Length: 267
Picture 1 (cartoon, helix red, strand yellow):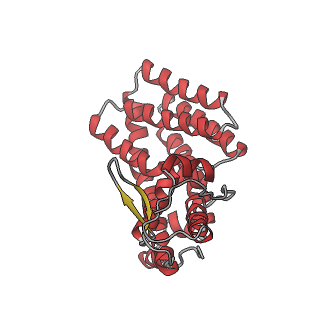
Picture 2 (picture 1 turned 45 degrees about the vertical axis):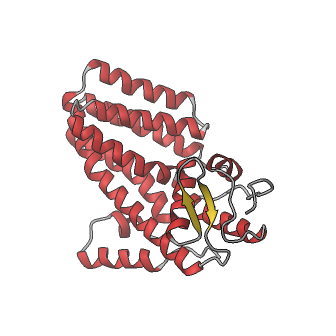
Picture 3 (picture 1 turned 90 degrees about the vertical axis):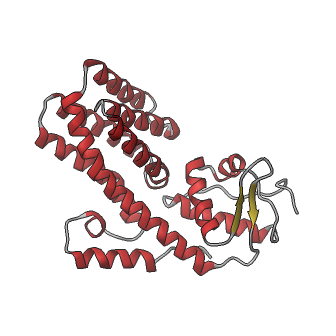
């Protein structure tokens, strides 16, 4: 069994981050001549080398484990181990497609749940709740261009929004969606322009909530959701209308089949 020492993987410069991580990891396994049972560096070190977040790395590892490339062992003697030195390209592509389908479903679920949460928060939020939302917006503004900190401030805003409902089941449900969204946000959004757009839409959302204007809040939320949805759809080769627009059942079934059959080539 080899040790992690000397294992190097190239950093990622891509919008489809978790898919790029899969490609870089499989390429590095072959380039270093690793064999079945060989151990890879730890999660922290791999994320550092790839220059991605740990949630995005976990998403890539989940796909590689599902497709039989990696063996993920838990516990004190655990870690990431090569399960096969012969990369099953078709299995990896299928697993990537399943991950993309799951991401699309998460984004749709977010629309339903977060819309309800925002309207409930507008009805229930106290002055202290609004102060917490303002603080999250100010922290986002202060760290524009610093992607990891912008993502933390964005997550802080959404946690504060959920708390503003004063409803524990809603808060728990939103926290679950947030965990699923974290690698999607990391993989499919970014850049200074997007940071400014996020800041603007948070401000507009807060104004609509304070004005108790349900129609305006719905319009702002649509803009908010579409930002990430659009980036995701474009990255996987679909239009926003195909994945998230209103269409027939036949249209939606066709898109789902397209996602499952059209996985990325990671060879």
